[in-house]
Every structure is written in C-alpha cells, then in structure tokens.
Amino acid sequence: MPPEDPGLAFDNRFVTELPGDPQSTNARRQVLGAAWSAVRPTPVSRPQLLAHAADVAALVGCRETFVQSPDFAAVFAGNALLPGMQPYAACYGGHQFGNWAGQLGDGRAITLGEVVNAQGERWELQLKGAGPTPYSRTADGRAVLRSSIREFLCSEAMHHLGVPTTRALSVVTTGDDVVRDMFYNGNAQPEPGAIVCRVAPSFIRFGNFEIFAARNDTAMLAQLVDFTIARDFPHLAHRAGNAEEQRAAWFVDVCERTAHLVVHWMRVGFVHGVMNTDNMSILGLTIDYGPYGWIDDFNPHWTPNTTDAQMRRYRFGQQPAIAQWNLLRLAEAIAPLFADTDALQRGIDRFSETYIAQYEAMNAAKFGFVTRGEDEQRIIREAYKLMYDAEIDYTLFFRALGNVGDTLPSTPATVLLGDVFYDDAKRDAQADALTEWLQAWHACVSRHDRAHGRSVAVRRAAMHAVNPWFVLRNYVAQEAIDAATAGDPSVVHALLEVLRDPYTEQPHHGRFARRRPEWARHKAGCSMLSCSS
Image (cartoon, rainbow, N blue to C red; front, side, top):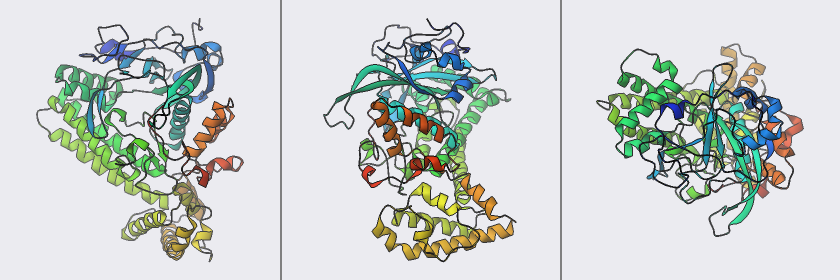
C-alpha cells in the first residue's frame, strides 16, 4: 500500500460540482448530460519510474521521499490510488482539422484528482496512457514510451522557455508492450508502453463547451461556463455584474490568453501540429503534445504532422489564424448564453488587437529594437525572407545576431553568422543580400543603442533573454527516446537539466543545441511525426 501521507491534499471540485455520468461501467458509449465519467486506471505489469521533474513534484506538494519510493511508480502508473483521489475522464467534443468530430473526450487520459498546495494553488494530476475510458472508442487507452518521453520533456522545456503550458510530473514505464502503426501504413509493431503524469490548473478545453452546445444542452453549458469562471478565473468571479457580464469578460480573457500563447509559440519557433479545438486550453496553455516540433530552417509552411502533410492546415505561419478560427468555434458554442453577439465579437476583436500588438513587440525584441518604425519593420520583413530563401536555422540565427558587437566586422555575413545554414547553394546565392541586410540591421540597432544609452552588453542580454540557446529539437528528443528504449534513461535526464536554463549558453551540453544534422532531415521522429502514440 502507498504511504498514508505522500504530501498531497485533494480537493476535487470538477467531480463534486459538475454532473457525472450515471453509468459506472467502463464501456465505450455516448455520455449525455454529464461533464465526466468515473473510471479507474487499468493496472500495468511492472511499473518503474523513468524520470520525474523535481520542481513539479514540489509544486504540487509531493514529498521527494515519496517520489523515490516504489509506491510513487505504482500510483502514477495507475496501479494504486491515494486517499482523496477520485479518478475520472472528461466529456468533450471538438473540431478536428476543421470538421466537427462529435464526442471525443478523454480517451486515454484519466485525471486522478485536484491537489491544492501549501500556497493555495490548484493543480490537476492527469495520467496519459492509463487505459481505456468510456471515450476511447476503438482505442486501447495506452501510450508508448516515445510519445510519453516527448510530452514529458516538451512540457518542461516549454515552461522554462516562458511559454504557457501544462507541466509534467513523471514518466513511468509499464513493462507492457503497446502495438502501434506509427505512420498508419499497415506496419503495426509492438513498442514499450509508458504513462506520463501531466499537471495543470485545469484541463478544460474549448471542446468541453462545444459538446453541450452541439447537443443543445444549454443548461449544462451554462453550468460548465459558470463553474470554469468560479474555479479557474476567480479574478472574474469576484467582479461586480450579472452572469452575462461575467461570461463576456471571461470570453475576452480567454481570447487574450490565446493570443499571448500563440505569440510565444511564434517567438520560439514552436509548431503545435494539431490545433484542433479539443486541443485548445481555456487557460491559454499549450496542451496535448503530439506531433509537435520546432522549426529548424525557417519555413512558415512547415508542419511536423504527417497527417497534415497535404493540407498543412496547422503549419507554423498559420497558427495565429487557426487560433482565431478556434475562438470563433468557442464563441458559437457559448452564443446561446448571450442576448446578442456583441460581447463575443469584442472578444474576437480583442484577440486580433492583442496578437498584433504583442507579435510586433516580440519581433522587435528578437531583433534588439527598442522602438518600432518603418525602418525596423522593413528590416524584420527582409530578415524573414532571407532566412527562408537561404534556409537559415531560426534559433541559431537569432543567437548569432545577439552576439554581434558594437563594431561590425568586415567579414561576410555568411561567415559572421556561423553554422546556421542548411543548404550551401542557397547560402551562396543569398550571401551578398545577407551581408547588405546585416549592415542595415547593425546600423539601425546601433542607433537604438545610442538613442537609449544602451551598451552592447545590455542589448545582447535583452536579445538573449527572448531568443533561446536551446530548444527541444525533434532529433534531440529522438536520441533520448532511442537511448531510453534501449534501457538507458541518461539522455532524458541530461535533457531535463539542459532545458531548465534554455537562455544560457551551456558549452558542456553544446551537442544538444546544434542545428539539425543532415541524417535527421527525413529520419522517422526527427522531422515529421504522426498522431500515433
């Protein structure tokens, strides 16, 4: 039995304040008039802790002595429950690749409960890959080691990059194989199974509201909206005003958070890969890490998702437009709660205003500009075109730019920028244009330095604070997966240390920050990925 007091205090408002599924059997079905279904994780044969994030354990109030005990692996593999846990799977729907998909729900995610830490912060603990639920349809509810490691590492990498995200507590291997067809080409293979425990203040998503709107269950829709405001947006719940005014303020808040989130994605070069409405957090967090990726060479048309290879609906440059499209679907879902659509239009307008303002400010910061005028905007536009034409690494380009000093050397830009190019012919074709651009940028940023009394060291620090040295490139994550699959978790542990300080150069871990090697351009897991996990 697990220890009686691992340090976790549960207060499960989602299941105590919202209607649950009256059926208790774990059978696939349409769940009507309920926000959740009670379901227990399915035990595994040999749970073993592969890795955990110590700061997340401390965040939720979990004692490190408990983490190091065999009981921790048992609990977070789904083999045991702690006192106070009330496991459930949530009911939601969603638009997938632009089409309404009906009921989806937590098909392999099981929330163990909500903990409240010593600071009064609420955190949901959710297992991904812990077995089937009433929402699993024809799936087995399990997850493989490769996807679990990717979600674990990326959740923590994004947090330390300053991107709003869910967190990850642990990865536990199960000792059981899971059969998956990685590229949906008829080559299903057994893979090692694993379970990741992800952590967030709330896992409520746009699709939680869409399902009740689609079923014309306005009473349940209103109850869920008001619950979400009360639990997850207390700053709005305490504002004066009637229910409709609070709901209107809430939608505007959601729109602002979503704009803020996507700006951060664009800043660090992150591509979510599957921005369905059921993968959009009501808190503006990055959730559901599936076929994600960071752009290596700058390409606004790139998507990491093999399922989206033809349409490229969720490509890097399309993410702001898709976020707005998803917000429009949320607005349509909650429209029955409003007398007219004016309040909802204010939210959509607020998304556009917030995104444009923050995106422009973000770009200025990446290029080291203090103010933004026509010259600065022109230089930024030209830079992105050259980065695309010359096939330049997005992350390494901005770090190299930040390292340029007070005096611009006479060497060509192709030499000064260093090893940031993926194609020699494209590099050579754009060499003169790059040198000319670099001279124009340096003259402009130097004027900013003089006008604001800013030293080069201060400018460099400001640029490096928004342009990371390390991002979790797909090929690096795949190296960690390959090693762990062979029984060596050391690369996972090393990456967990590196990603905690992504804006500081770490020469002893320099191999993790190199541009994508040529062998990884088309290797499975190193470029594009499928939704299979």
